[in-house]
Length: 49
Image 1 (cartoon, helix red, strand yellow):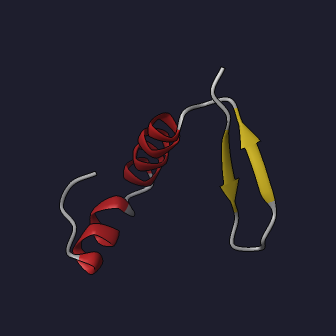
Image 2 (tube, rainbow, N blue to C red):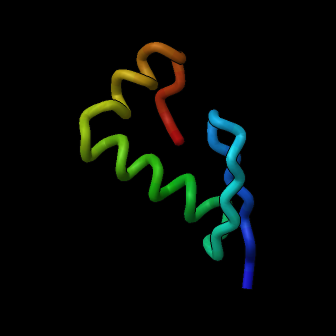
């Protein structure tokens, strides 16, 4: 079972069972659902994740 450590901006660390790729996919899906994904990509000049 994979464990991934996520460090929040506050410094708090979370250990989750998802892989890094799964965490990334879920984060992108969440950002898209609230309309921030395109804005963040335009700002960073990164069109794909």
